[in-house]
Amino acid sequence: MKAVISATGLWTPKNSINNEELVESFNAYVDKWNTENTSDITAGIKDALTYSDPAFIEKASGIKSRFVISKEPILDPNIMAPHIPARPDDEPSILAEIASNAAQQALESVGRKPEDVDAVIVACSNLQRGYPAIAVEVQSILGTNGFAFDMNVACSSATFGIEAARGLIMGGQARSILVVNPEICTAHLNFKDRDAHFIFGDVATAVLLEHEDVAPKEHWEVIGAKLVTQFSNNIRNNFGFLNHCAPEDDGLKGERGKKGLTDKLFVQNGRSVFKEVVPLVANLITEQCAANDLDPHALKRMWLHQANLNMNVLIAKKVLGKDVSLEQAPVVLDEYANTSSAGSIIAFHKHSSDFKNGDTGLICSFGAGYSAGAIFVRRVG
Ligand code: COA
Image 1 (cartoon, protein in one colour):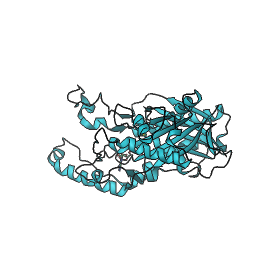
Image 2 (image 1 turned 180 degrees about the horizontal axis):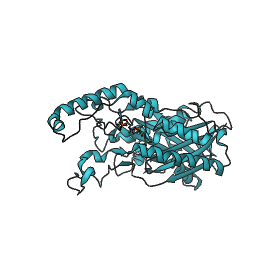
Image 3 (image 1 turned 30 degrees about the vertical axis):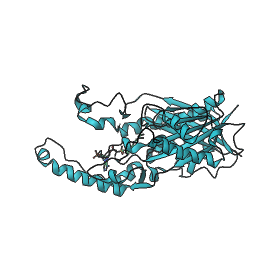
Image 4 (image 1 turned 90 degrees about the horizontal axis):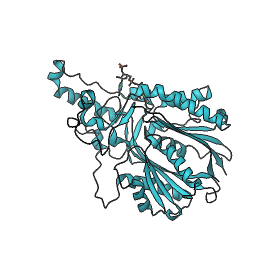
């Protein structure tokens, strides 16, 4: 009995911000902050802030632009954050809305109706509330059957969601499951932090998994998969309902206490992530190729997580022992930036239409946790 991938969907916000626009606003903020803090800077109490640079961003990460839900406030040096107004409880939440858009597209692409779907899993890094689960709201918006739940494995949420769905289908709980990845990453990004202000964008992706008996003739067979996690604080986001009190009230001292509200946003030690995650992922792919009797050189494509171009180039080189072309490991980072769990699914969605019957490829995620997921697929039909 097999569970296969029948379709994917992608919802992209209308607005985007390129590196030049982002840096112009960041540098205006730097000028403003330095002017406001001139006396402390002169007295040596505070360090002056330094400019960001579009050339650094592109060279260090491969990112040229990012799509965003809310553009103007991010670029306003007096705000430097998206404005996503709270909605009343009787209106669809923004996360459920964008998730539904991506899911709808996946369903329409294979002529499925909502009632054909037995379950919805919202798998993403950036959930907007504790409960009710966003997935149950998506179930209600779309009109799907059965059950729904949320799950979060940070950047690996999509691959872990695919594996959760496969397990549920093979266990008999459902025959058709939508795994949806709505990622509003900009709401968790500190746009005043030079080291990170360029990293993330917003998007939503969807993957439809079905029992092979109901799947369309043309689909993706999953021929092997492996999930791993290993605890690390090198990528962290402390946002959460148990974690909303002011830092002076929660007894935190030292650097973390001083960070105030920014402690509730994304932080990372990018260099360590790079060094530690590259071997973890390269070993995972190599070992799983061996375990599944797959020659990595025979993989037509690797749809890797989209966090950093240099990281992807290095992972592919470690696995294949040589430089790889963009055709073998496509990049969407330049246009979308890091979209957390959605990244490898965007790459898969946009760069898979040339696959012929029997061609094999790898969807691979990695990120906070640490977490990594490898899903080997073969085109059928
Ligand atoms: N503009 C100009 N210079 C900048 C800058 C900016 N926006 N941000 C940092 N720099 C400077 C630093 O100050 C540093 O200068 P120094 O050498 O004089 O001290 C230099 O550039 C290098 O900074 P560093 O942070 O070490 O850059 P990096 O090459 O490691 O690239 C990342 C940074 C974040 C792009 C990279 O580490 C990365 O992507 N890592 C993996 C992250 C990842 O996968 N995360 C998963 C998240 S889900």
